[in-house]
Length: 236
Image (cartoon, rainbow, N blue to C red; front, side):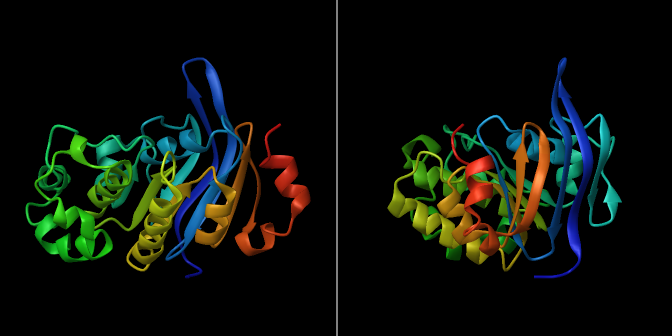
């Protein structure tokens, strides 16, 4: 893990309609790290990811990616800078094949050809089911495909929202191992509701509570901090 931050989110405030959802969120993501956003349902974790990628642009504050302020850029322009986004509920194209889902994620015409070896090493199921439609895949395979699409371009940062949601434990174990492996290629910022999974995967954490970042540190230190876990992560 590097001391250089790939991403710096500085005191962002994001509104959705009239609602002030993020009321001061700051996140630092060191290069080569896996960093997790933690917090209860509705705390603002998903909105933080959407604010970074420009789907819900912050009204104030800054998002700095590799030293560049992304303020005012549209989502596709931010993505083209080298940020991949894996949304909650996967959002794959269910009527398209695995191959087609991957192909349309290209930013350059030979992206998939260059990256297919790495992608299929991480997710061998996708190679075996390359001609299957998205709706013919299991939930775990759909999640693999959603992550794989974000790996087709040469992204230096991946934003992954709730990768374990709705998956069986044995599938989660394989998926978490794949995310751990891909962190050797790219930096990862993820939202994960399951603290046990998050603590095994991420080196660093940021806790968000009611739209504010309230605590950050190393995950290994949080595991034994029952006071913080009870205050911010257990059901109210």
